[in-house]
Amino acid sequence: MAYEHILVFREGAVGRVQLNRPQALNALNAALMAELVAAFREFEQDPGIGCLLLHGSDRAFGAGADIKEMAEMGAIDMYTRDHISLWDEVARVKKPIVAAVSGYCLGGALELAMLCDIIVASETAKFGQPEINIGVLPGAGGTQRLTRAVGKSLAMEMVLTGRMLTAQESLAAGLVSRVVPVEAYLSEAQKLAAEIASKSPLALRLAKEAVLQSFETPLSAGLAYERRLFALAFASEDQKEGMQAFAEKRQPQWKGR
Ligand code: CAA
Image 1: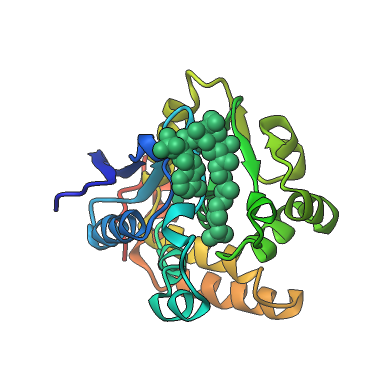
Image 2: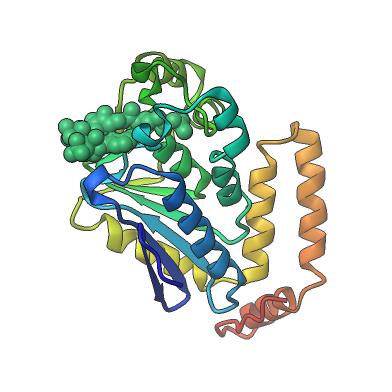
C-alpha cells in the first residue's frame, strides 16, 4: 500500500513506521492517522512481525494534532467525524509497540506515544500537552494517560501550563524507559524492538494484555486477570517449548501458539 504521510519498513521481525510530514513537524492530521492505523493493521496481521516501532524525525516525533485542520471545526464536526477514534485504533493493537521519540512530542503526538508500550527518548526530546495555549485541553487521552504515567501534580502542571518536560525529567517521572543520545536513540529502539520480537508472540500478547489491564481494574481483579492469563499460557506449545529449551540449555523455537 502506498502512503503519503508515513514511511513503512519491514526489518526482520520488526515493523517500523516513520511519521513523515516534516513541513508540519509531523502534525497528526486525519489522513496521517488513517495511514498509521492501516500500516499498524497490516503489521498486526503479519505473522512474521513480532514488534512494531514508531518514530518521527530527530527534530520532531510530532507537534500534536493538526491545528490548522481543526481550527474551523465545530463541536458537531468534531463529534461526527471523530478523528480522535483513530488514536483508539492504535490502543487496540495487540503486538508490542516501541516509540522512539526525539525533539517535540506534543499534544496528540504525546497521546500517541503514550499508546505505545515503551518510549525510548533521545536527549533532545521534549514532552508536553500544550493544548491550554490554544484554548482547549488534551483530547486524545492526555488528561487520563499522562496522569497515570507521571502522577497528578506533574500532569496538572503540564496540562494547566503547557510546560514541556525535558528528556531527563520524563525519565525521572517514569514517562519513558530510557534516554539515549540523539545519534543513537533510533538504533537503540530498533535493538529493543528486535529483542522483543524474538520472544514468543503468544506470550508477548498475553503479557501486554495483562500489563494494560492494570490500568483498568483494582489490584485484586488485576491479579485474578493475570492468573487466568498465566494459566492460559500453559495451554500453549510455546510454554512447553520454552521450559523444555531451558532444561535442555538451548534456544527455544517459538510457534506463536
Ligand atoms: N498543527 C499544524 N501545523 C503545525 C503544528 C500543529 N500542531 N505544529 C507545527 N506546525 C507547523 C507550523 O505551523 C509551521 O508551518 P509553516 O512553516 O507553514 O508556518 C511548521 O509546522 C513549523 O513549525 P514552527 O514554525 O512553529 O516551528 P518552531 O520550531 O518555531 O516551533 C513548536 C515548534 C513549538 C512545536 C510549534 O510549532 C508549536 O507550538 N506547535 C503547536 C504545538 C501544539 O499546540 N500542539 C497541540 C495541538 S492540539 C492537540 O494535539 C489536540 C489533541 O489533544 C488531540
